[in-house]
Image 1 (cartoon, rainbow, N blue to C red):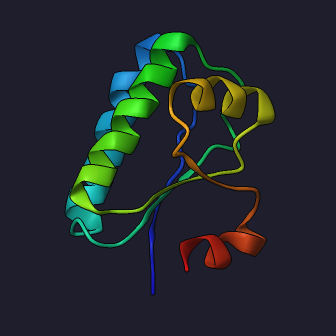
Image 2 (image 1 turned 90 degrees about the vertical axis):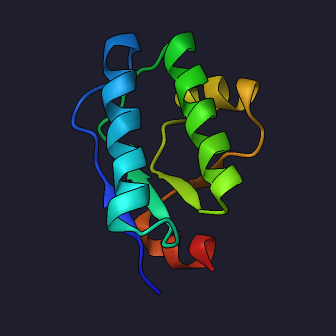
Length: 104
């Protein structure tokens, strides 16, 4: 079983949220055909803001409605705290070493 990996190169702030959300949506629908899990590598994301966290919440809900897995890989604790305040159903994986377990 495979997955599609999306790796944003910039922080997750208000100006970049729409671009990242569009790229993840495109990966989920086109590359993963709406069925494979999409994994977002968050290792380059150091900060976020409330508006971006709301964008993440919207992504999670969109993938959930479609029945497609969305996993956040290597998300920093400070960002997890902000996002979990808005949405408790976020799937987080600490490293590639345990990704297969999270996707199972």
